Image (cartoon, rainbow, N blue to C red; front, side, top):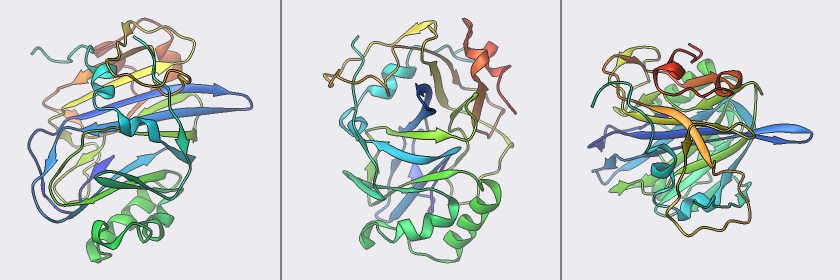
Length: 268
């Protein structure tokens, strides 16, 4: 999910999302991420929130060094309507992380959001006013068992790097990619038909997908857990798609499917 506290996000809104299954004995871990091509055009404080269906959230810090990672992961996906080497990564389990020019905070539940926001420098964090309180209350009602990532900044900004999160999922059998969007300062209208502009890719460890990923950035190749070698997915450019997350059974990714075939498999 992404939401702004102030309606200062302008330009093209395009969210890149992917999720990949990580099987590690004795538990299963997933990875999810997003990136916006929109930009903030106001000298105000803004904060984006991403909810994650799980716990033990950890930020993949190496992702902050990339500029084209999500484009590589999603760029080859088919549209729903007409129109190399795998990099490595390190994890940082922390409350607040500086990923210039923005700060990232992690909350294990919606009840911890305000507490974690207080750890972000005052000049870059939102004021706890009535609007923010209502937003957090809404999170506690709609996403009770979810963790949250908060991305905060002040001033003019265009996000140039993805935010990638490793977590222990609530449901091992389902992959999640963030899809609920609200960038007008209001609460998201979940399920409302809206114009979509999101590239969404999925990968499953051990199951080959139809699209090979070609990375163009010189990254550490010692570890490969957060960068899939092949993916499936779609460019959701529907004019009347539902404002919702992208949840898909892992069983649906064990065959050569993409585009509308995957849309039909999504959990509504």
